[in-house]
Image 1 (cartoon, rainbow over the protein chains, first blue to last red):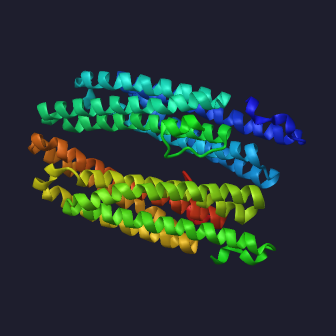
Image 2 (image 1 turned 30 degrees about the vertical axis):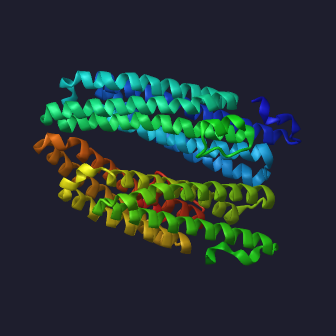
Length: 233
Length: 233
């Protein structure tokens, strides 16, 4: 985190605190990444035990969000940070909210994995697998960019979400034809549809996190701006 | 906002700044409330012109989020607030993120209103109307609680979301039977389903805002806690 200008702080304790929340948000990211991988594995193999593990694990994700957020507020009140230190804390506080929501998406995916009717719908699960892998890669790269606070990578990753969106559109169309061909399968196809939507939302959350990275590094709020506008910053 | 202890501030300018962001978040809430009402009207009457107005109006909602957030950061850096002032700013900064997402939900509802195929599906639209009114009332009461920073009302409202959730579950079941009876209608029924989901999400967002109100007033983060735990605070 070379951009952090840590050495400018007189207080070594303050440095340690910033390091600590930075490490904790990365640990939370690691946990959420594992949750996503396991949720997708559970859905791909209809592994109810693994799905339940993911659902139970969401509790830890929520707990991390609350405790990191508390620490962010404590640091603001105690250290009265300004400039890039304040931006770091704000970026972290927003990032954990999106990580928590990716955790919720994992629970939705895991819930679909509990639907036993999907045993007869293997082709549906294959269709979502590719998108799932794509989303996992996106999350992994986003967390890498966060660890290095790399705004250039964040800008490129931000653009990636459009691809995930079109993959999702394709899957929705595919699921629609399944339903039209075999209306009795509608309840279980809808379960896959919710899971697909949850996977797509992971991409949106990663896009948000990329925006916070850019905000921290460049000092500019790029929400609701285009790729071209971002490149110019 | 009697809990704000405004008179304790030596700086009258600081008071004015806190008043200003408080007014701005309420104005943003008013705009989002109008967007929701119009989006639901547009869907109920399949009024494409009104739907387009809602879609275009989302730009203003986004702009308000960015500018209020900027002001929050500026106040933290300049005034170094602590205790309830800091909590107020944090609560506002989180609230606007949820208001912005309610704005996105309005766009999704408005998009469904653009689907001309729904002309032949009037009963579907009626089913969503009741839930829509319920969500509008919830948002209105949430914004009232926010204006008065009333934690007791916020706790009661928080519980309300479960009702909206069961209404939503009922609509999903109903939409499923429509699709199974007339598979050709699946594409347009899915549009209603996305709109129903967006309405349901409005309730979740209101629940979040209620949590921020409680956080501000009681100084306690109540995310991921139960109604009983909240009442004890």
